[in-house]
Length: 385
Length: 232
Figure 1 (cartoon, rainbow over the protein chains, first blue to last red):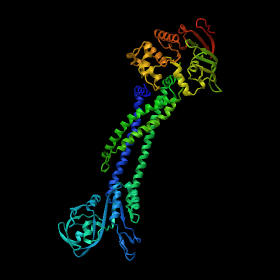
Figure 2: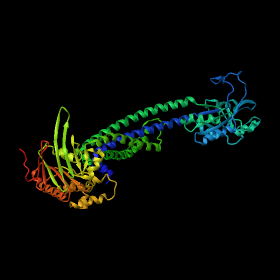
Figure 3: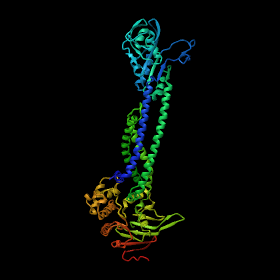
Figure 4: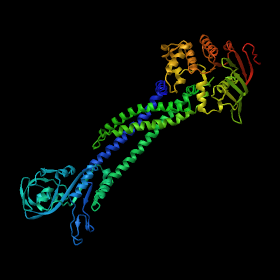
C-alpha cells in the first residue's frame, strides 16, 4: 500500500466533497477552455476577414524623393523622374521567407503603360493564380488568362473600349484575347489590363523588372516579424504594412484577450477559493484521522503529500470533465450567436491549456489545506477521551 | 537502562493569565517486557502523560528517553521516525481507518516505507492475532468488534516496535471484546514488548504488572496493581 491508495480510498469515502471539488475545478476548466476557444475563434475569424483585404505588405523599390501625392492625386514637377525596380533576386529573397512559413503569398507586380487599340492603358503583369487566391473580392466574368495571349480587363477598361469576353484586341503591337472581365472592385484594379507577368515581359522585352511585391502574412500576428525579416533581406527596399487594418486587428485582439483573461482569472480565482475552502473543511473533519497517521509515523510531508495527491486525482477528473464540457460549449456557442461568422476552431492547445489549468488551480488550492493538515498535532489522535 | 525513562516531566497548557498544569514533575521508568497501567480519573493527566510517552506532545520541562534517545531533543521529522520504529499505538475506540481494508489498516505504518514485502508483513501480523487473509480484505465495518480490536493490535505491532501504548483500549468495547484486547496486550508484554495502557477502569488492570496512579497531574502511587492504595 502506498500513499496514493490512502488518497484514493478517502476520496471514495467522501464522495460528496470529492464531487464538489471536482465540480468547482471542472467549471473553471470548462470556462477557461470556452473563453480561450472563443478568443482563438474570434482571432481566426478576424484573421480571415483581414486576409480578404489582400496583401498585408507592399515591398517597393527605394524612393529617391518624397512622395508628392495626396488622396490619390499626384503632383508632378517634383523628383528626379527616375523609376526604380526590384528584381528576381529580391523576389527570391522574399519567397525564401515564405518557405520559412512567415508568409502565405508572395505576388510580384510589374506595371507598364501600353497602347490598347491606339490608346494608353496601364497593364499589370502578375501571378494571376496567386492573386486570385489572395484577392478574395475578385469576381471574374469569364475566366482568368491561362495563356500568354489572354488578358483580363478591369471594368472601366471594358466599358471605355466596349470590349467583351472572347474579343480580340491589339495591345503593345500584339493580338490578345479577352478571357474575362473583372467585376467592379471600386479600386485601381478597375482601370487595369491584367496579364501574366511573363506575357508582359515578352511585350516590353525588359525581363526581371518588378515594380512592387505584394506579400500576405501567414497570420496578422506575423506581420511585424515579417516586415523585420524583409527589411533584413532587402535593406534598400521600402516595406509598407497595411497599418490601419493590422493595428485595428491587433487592438481588437488585445482588448478581447484582456477581457477574456479577466473573465478567466475571475472564474479561476472563485473556483480556487471554492476548492480551498472545501478542502479546508475536509481537512478539519479529518483531524483525528490525520492525528492517527502522524502517530503511526507519517511525517508532515507525508500528510501534505496525501492532501496534494487527493487534489491531483480530483484535478485529473476535473480536467477530463472540464475540457470535454468546455469544448462542447465552445462548439455550441457559435450556433447561439445568430448572423455571426464565428466558428468553432479546435486546437490541441485547448486540451493542453484545460489540463494545465485543472492542475494549476487544483494543486494551488491544495497548498494551504495541505500545509494546515501537515501542521496538525499528532496528539489529536488521543484527544476527545 | 530502562526502555522508557521519564524524568521530571512537567506539562502546562494555556498562557500566563490562565495556566493549567496537567503534569507535575512526573518521573517513571518502564522496562522491556513490563505491562504497566496508568490509571486515574478524568482530567488527572493520564492521557497527557501517554501523549508525552508517545513522542507526540513535548513537555514544558523534563525529558523523555526511549532506548537512551532523548526524544524531544529530536526534530519533528526524527520524532516521527522514532514513533514508527519504537512505538505501536492502540487507540481508544480502536480508530481503524474506515475506508481501508483490515489488511490496509495494518499496513498503514508501512505505507510511507519504500520497501518490498509490506503486504507479507501485514499478513503475518494479522495471522498472529488470528485474522486470515480473507477477513483481512474486509472493511472494518464488516468485522466484529473483537476482530476490529485484533486488527488494531496487528496494526500496532506490524513494525515490531518495542513499545506498545494503548489509550483506553477497552473503554468503548463490550466485555468479551475488551477481554480479547487485554489478553493480546498481556501476550505482547510476555513477548518482550513494554506495554503501557491508560485506563480509568480498575477491572482492566487485572493482568498488568504494575499500576501507575495519576491524580491531579502527579504520580500518587506506583506499585503493583494489587497493593496500590488510591488516595481519597
